[in-house]
Image (cartoon, rainbow, N blue to C red; front, top):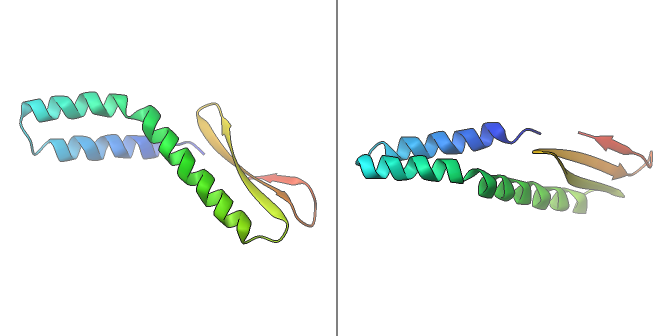
Length: 88
């Protein structure tokens, strides 16, 4: 799963919110939007990991894992009837 569209939307939202302010506000938003990517990626990955853990508690013998693949996130389901892994 490519997180870039979500990060880009966050940047656009920040820029849009700052457009109501003065020049200093817009410059600050531009700097923040450049610096926010690592923190936003980490927050999204943590949320996805928590979601996977919650889903796992509702499954019978299957485990949902979130795995980092470069800058992308992958979802893998293991266990269950087949005993193998299925990537999503």
